[in-house]
Length: 340
Image (cartoon, rainbow, N blue to C red; front, side, top):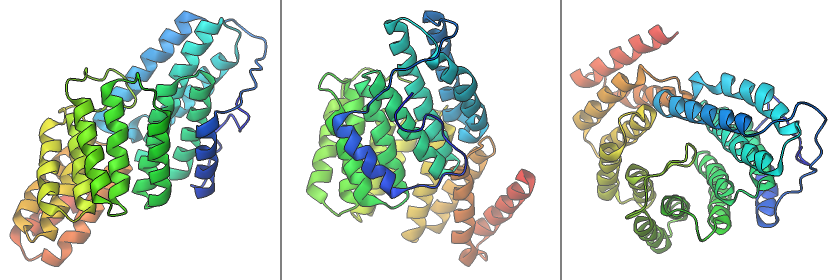
């Protein structure tokens, strides 16, 4: 097992100090003991089964939110994957399983992030790094570091987010697929924009677009990145740089290019676009986007999506005499009562 704790205890708090350890280890690798207890031998069948589970969990998360699978995925890691990792196997089978286990653990981190359980999400990300490094899986290592950067950025820890984005870029091998290099450059642009560094941010976005152009469609269930993802990063960057016109255009592009199956992403982007429109005095346009959000939200089990409804209600209360705003507030209140 990893030299850090192999399990992920309940009730963990998000710790900035843990990110310093991650950044240090990202540059030099992680020690792995390599000890495994005796038991039933595992091989290609188990590795294939784990990969099939990864595809299933990933699809459910993108469509319906992390809340639907969080507990089940955590239990699957504990009761199935962890014993397999400890069992005897050939070097090739062990590496394949560790690669898939790293991706499953990264996904488990993300669904905890989606359910706003940030301490546990951080611990799963760190455990995923252990697994990826033990398998010499440079691509997944870069994806995980980017995930940690996104989490830190979302929580407002911009210096750590920027360092993690740079670490992800540095660990990415030159032979990585174009979509992954684009994803890492886009995240670096977003974190640079948090410090109002316009030129580096825009240069990274331009580089990301070049890497994405002509790149094959991503097949990885963790770390997938496409036109909508880049448009979303453009929008976030423009928002930080107070370029509201381009932010509006980029958010609209992100909605247009986002696959219909990615319902949670649609909901989150609709909220960001509505909030931007309201800040620019466009109440009715904002209400139109929030109306779509309420419709999409019904299918989701995601604390991040739930939070958008709470924020919408707070933002619309000062406009409760407006007919559209009042109708949305009533619908949101009814939706909340049904959810309870």
